[in-house]
Length: 145
Image (tube, rainbow, N blue to C red; front, side, top):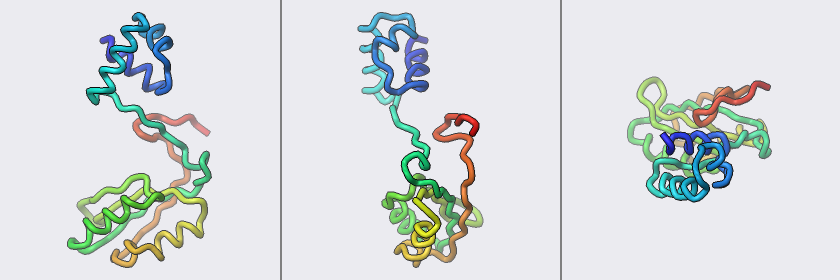
């Protein structure tokens, strides 16, 4: 139960200090420190930042639905995952073989990414869906507006 309370505090604020964790979980600062470090060291808790792309100059967000021959899926997936514009990439079963979530500064950059990249030349087709507003990122609900 104590570790779950620590995880809840960190989920709200991954930068919370041991003093805040101790206060909010009803433990001593040394216990908060020891338990937090244990949770992190053993991989029970992972800290990561969820960044709204538009806040860092990347207001154009899109999902790319990619069709590819079976022998090209892995190679295209590896190329996509190495691109800084790609936030998420996965192989799929169904009408499309890959999906990628990309963030870019503008429409022109999205056009270049989907037409001039080496991976795009090997894809059979790419369908683009523009993301207008995200409601949830990384399992966390986002504020409205």
